[in-house]
Image 1 (spheres, rainbow, N blue to C red):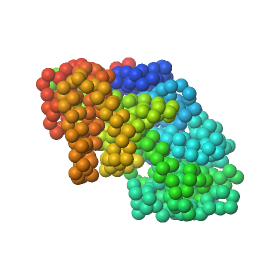
Image 2: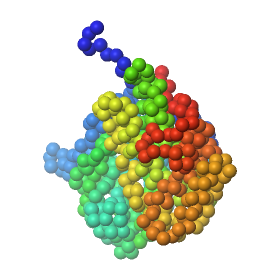
Image 3: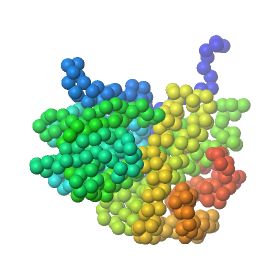
Image 4: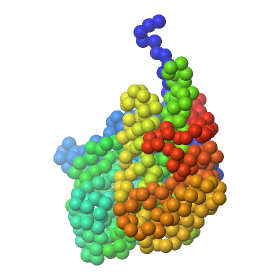
Length: 542
């Protein structure tokens, strides 16, 4: 025996289908996109393949670099990316993870896109421009002439990177630029100004504190016009081929999401086209914000699935104290608890995707449900991911703490979705705002939750408790997180009881609704069907 003989190491989690996820596939069929299963599995095999995983590693180990000037001193404001980034982007665009559903008349097109966005996870960073391009279309439609010009290119499945006039390209990507130093989430405090010109354009002057994916072709941004805060479309390159004076000052040095560039931007009288009426900028751009919030939920659910499958794979192959880790009762409790959380997030994500699809087709009831459920889901699922990622990492022990395992990258990514498009408090307050101003949204939400009435006594009791919580209007802002958490739990419980695996639904109701659960993962009660739950999380490799 040599000192360097390698024993008891887990084989790489490579060569599996990331779409082989029962909760995802059941939701795909239930929400009207079963027709997309073949392409979803094709993408899943790519996502679980060695090449895509390597591209994800390289894109993060070689983050983007800002080039403000060329060698002659001319201002260029370009961002350089590793070739691996472009390969990830090309796959995403080719498979329609961006705005393609807006050009697809098939019922379930947005559900199919959500499932693909969930499945394609070799790197989370490149999902940001993909998500914003998806979300830009309904906001851009507030300016029909601009939508007619640019929407066909935003929905095109051609990845055409580079700074050229937008209409000269085969496909476009769109970004969003709202927050400023002094305001953050309070975008009404923005100070960027928009001066109208005789030709119908505006000139923007100001500074944006966060502009994610600054290499996109078009940006929706907010600025103070004479009539108040207004939404504008800003291209990187003007129709005549000249650079729009949209100066990239520096790239943010972020905790995670490092493969994606986020920049500080200064508009030096940048040319912009108005989207929607003056003074209605927030109302206009909220369509984009809500869809990126959906992708926050999808991304967090996908991250949980990635974490629990990695942990389950490790525990299935790693031995300690004379047995495989997956055979140890306490590890089984941890894995099952992680799997329950993951499936609860996935079933909610797919329900929100279905509501988005039907809302886009004019279903008023689904629009009302989505208005509340999306804010609830965005708060809760994104809030649950960091603790889930930390526990999944810990299942690998010291091996999970080193970069080669991929788990530190997953952990660093996990806080982002709760912050993006409004932190937890912003999402919770948005729920209160919807409840106070739009009575139809609570009616739609209640109808969804009570569809499972009588199926589980613990769920029924939790629904009664949350109704009592909502009827108490004292200190409601102080209790906002508590209220939203309970709304999220009864919604997830109702979905799992109606559509989930019985063992998962029972474990969820016992632990999350019945209160038989500790403060950490791995504290499920006795009587849970651990084997059935864990078997759904173990990836099939080869």
